[in-house]
Length: 619
Image (cartoon, rainbow, N blue to C red; front, side):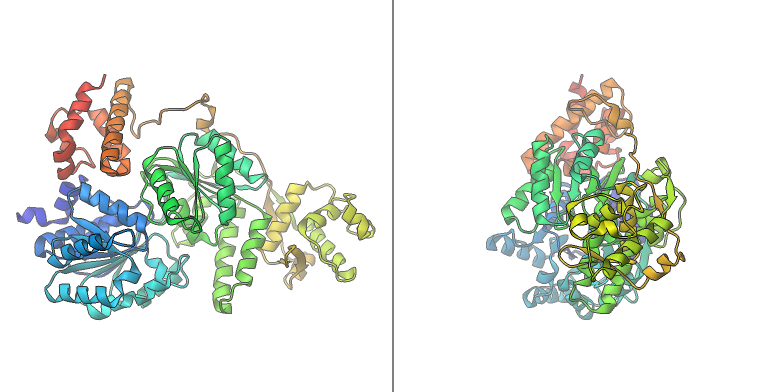
């Protein structure tokens, strides 16, 4: 093998078909290839996988040996192994989907040194049997590197803590001379420090990429019949697109998926309570078919490489900004425009506060979780640029993006200080009246002076606060209460979410705290909303004339046949952007085709002549 083919750049071009590295990829790849340890923080869609795949291939070509990729995700293992094999790289996974005979065959491949990358879950990697196999490989110089994906899972401060990750420090203790690269898309300073300590990466070089995903448009709306709001969002902006809808509970996942199907949206449920075969079928359909909406709990998504997810919607508030960022980051991995849309309301704030308060965790941990929730609530209630606030959380300065909902339609604000004092005074009057406590609905009824059965039952029309907020609409009162709970001036208690004052409410009642809130407003439909009804052909990622669009459609049809034949998602054969560039440039030779980004040597050999025939035959 020539010395030229042993460089990272040569591997990037020959195997993956890319002309150059992006951002910090080259520095990371060269550092790890040379034997250094690294902690890599890079947003979803930023190209983390290449940061360990390229060093693994280079080190294998130089010395043989296997790179062990630690991942908790069966979906990611299947997808990445399929993509690597398509690119001509010998890769495999060991997980529970294999038969005993299949697992033994892969172990033989691993022990022979012929395997380039092996994907395995942390609980398997740390078993005595697997460690004994690693010992044997190490003694023979056949361990090339360890890649620890989703490294935030090792930290109790991370948003996806997994106990199995804690045992991975054994890799440093037993194989100190084997380079390790730990990767994650989201980690604040506390989580980063925890990763370094628990994985013994004290000497590792830390690479932090920009967290900005400029192709994602962030929008957060106040809940007002959230299902209907979601349906409007999908129909107006993303009809026929692939998307993910996150819900907090399994029941809500199933009900929402069923309802979307009734409304004509192809939707599938996914949560940990479903049978494993059902989950696998639903995931495979989402990955392979176009225009499927997956309605899921957070059990779905981490490690999903589908590049053309055009939207991620939240019907419930996530726990923290890390979760929100990771989940929304699954949209637009191909760099094309995508949406992160969330509806949230008073009940979301109450539920998240309660989950923290009722957690069996220690008080220090609870304080940390409350601080993280406060940061997310500040993002949701913000009047200014969402992206600036999101990036600031990760310590990255920025300027207004001009692309989020607040930048595109700056919200009107109002001084809710006096309204907040009225609400807290009413809660105080309830308590004075024989220690009574009531929920938000009744409180708003009293403030607005509504004559209801409950008002009559408790004689609350006699309270001095009855009707003092009649001039404020119900939606604005919900906003006031939501903010008072978010800021900790009110607390919701018990099965019925009855409200009571906290110590900090005194400062609001004394007028020492100003409350500036956004006025709820309907946002105008954006550009795509104006199109005619019916199904549409998705636009190509690059501008194409009419003939180019026909070539692009022909290439997509050919790709679909290849994907079905190989039992792979279509994007693993070629990404849309690569097909679009083929349609635009119309290469007439294999050499010209090979110069297109995304066409590696193996794919050129396997598909090149077929592609040229498709292009030639396209009208």
